[in-house]
Image (cartoon, rainbow, N blue to C red):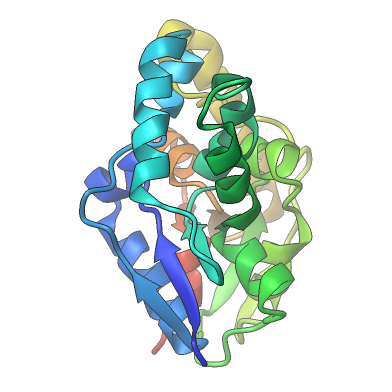
Length: 244
């Protein structure tokens, strides 16, 4: 029986990187998942929450719980560790002592970032159809590493792609400088952090910077394009869906 999956597509992906969402669906269906998409879904509430608007964020979070009702045997999978971290961790504060607390705990247990779902839940460590030639260095996003504990899963999947070789960069666990509204409020610091991350990546000689989060990749790609640096950014879903 196929594994039932409700996909959550974050704002960044929906508006700016829709192909990444489609590629995640392609991969999930290839491994036997029955993929469902609720057209009514919107945001997880993270932008408002990080900006300090807790009440407004709670309203959005309540809608998220409505959009993804708890059903036995169904998972929520997203191509963004940032949003998964928001639901898993920050909702605890938003719903503490509220009538929604029980619903939140059910949602918390069944939401996963795509690579951890594939590796840790389904036990899949390779997508045999995937093909990409070149070298890559991996960026551990803050949300993936620190909020969700994701480190090995994406590397295992990427290392299994024929033609792709990993070259770890220095300080791969250091923030890229995006941080949502941080990039707007502290532009100079944010750009300097992006520069440092890109320079570490270039020092490896890699062709690609790959990560689980489009927000980090968007930030790094903006710096790369502006400075005309010889490296590209790719989301892990785009890699796993390439070549077939």
